[in-house]
Image: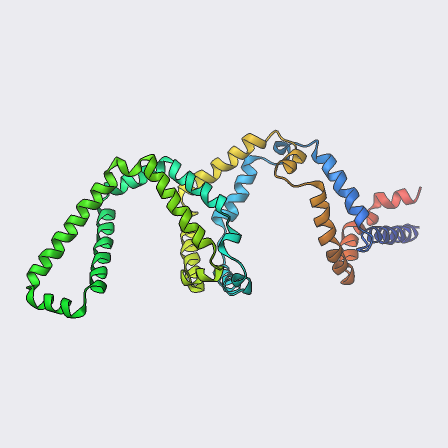
Length: 328
């Protein structure tokens, strides 16, 4: 008798697997996906974020991947290959810089940079930093020497070099550098430099320069940065990130950001949260219909779908309680 009940249970199992497999037919799954999505969204409208997960749970997960997980060495290699492919893509010669970034964006950025206190205070800070002042004065000194080297005939330079003792030349260079340092400090510390009129003129100069730059093809940017330069800059940033993520500062900022998110959205329903970030029902359905059919088709072709259903359903049809129902 038990064998007969088990045989009946096995037939029911096969029938249920066949039914579910038919429901998940890749060529007819669109309606099923829509029904399930609508059912999930209806339930999401009744569940608040705090009821589903806590800030502590999200914090543990974020720290696991952002801090604790060891990053693989394949990431820089992958980025390098992608940068090289993008850098040499033919579209770079078909687009102007201005087509990628419009002038209104540049103007808004310049206005904001000139507006924030950081800009004016930053330049003021330069005027009190001896290292940066020396760097700026040294750059001006080098630029002046280069200009004189290019502007004075070689015969005249040779004559001056022969007639002027080395210690005099060294003294002149020292005095010139000291004068440039004093003038740089005086210029940067002068409040007139930060007047609205001067900043307005600076804004116009930047926009005029941008208008010329915007007409150039993107390929001209290669003269400024090579593919290797970009890859090396990424590696520098990547190495910095690998160390920085272990700092107490990063951990504090991470926890603060997570707590701020939950303070704002903790009492929000999952459906409202989805809407808040701009993900619409039609977007979710469109993505489900794009990815689900090929995945289901692959699972069916390899027998993985039926095997998965059988693995989860078979124990139920083997339970004594189930067989007892069949005996009634």
